[in-house]
Image (tube, rainbow, N blue to C red; front, side, top):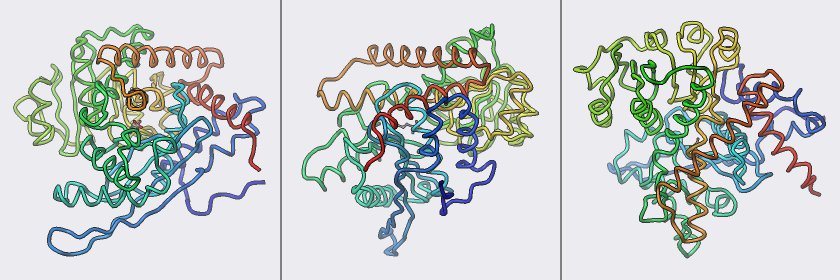
Length: 424
Ligand code: GLU
């Protein structure tokens, strides 16, 4: 007998509701391990913290911060920290759960965790951003650590923020604990290849999926939503492979060019002015038009819940590569499947970032650093092996790649759960 969680009220398409329905779909494939599945439907631990800082104008501001450790059956918690005005506990819970599935899907010795602060970092000065980061780190310091829970970058966080987190934690424990966060600057125990790793993983899994579908990447038309660290890097790698980036959307708007946008110009302009700053290279269109642009591959690389039922009906893509976490709501997943659109799910597609985070953590502990080729060769191998295993599972049971990824991952997590046994 299990009571429902009292502190969330998920809806069908909310992030936690989406995650719960993804877990429900895998239950028939878990055999006797299904007995343990409830463990995946609730976080192990969730911390809400107050983050007060003195603003530059002398006023005191309070922000709400979270760190959720969803599951640690297979190892320490692992997952990013996001700074966004819409962050909620429920969203962070879902993101932490997707980390549990993701780390298990690529067989990294981690559980899943995630953090966030409900703040718009674009409205903070650099000094205010540092204060928010440091106070938040100190508040969650009671549950993070190099062997317990290791944060990393996510939406609107970067290497500088990781450096402040590492320094704050280190000052509090009285040493230098480089292994407490990943995605750090190179001088501070960061890893070569980490910045591009998530986008690279999207490309590697996408290239393999296209090959299996018999789709030639040369001339393939790609639409990318979100042009940050994930979307822009994936777009560049696909363009290098001969694909045409025909539409890009970010927080400033949507730009399209059926002949392909020139990324050598778009990428630098987007960093300062957003993608609509590149008016000279394409047409700026209303945001909703993005979903019906003629394309072969769609890469959602922004936030959750973007591919709704309506947008799933509209898309002309044959292949969806989930660079973002949780971009497709369950009903849209079904529509895409009915329409014969293949989805490479987030929990494998964007696992390149956490995979190189793992390499960074291992390098920090051994104090021996690998060159970029070694990182990329290992990353590609892990991603390809994981994808092939998932594909075989999907073929065997005639299920979607998402449910197959959950089947592979949940078996690993719940086996560990069963073997450890319940304490006391
Ligand atoms: N934030 C990234 C993700 O969603 C990376 C997490 C990590 O490196 O720990 O997978």
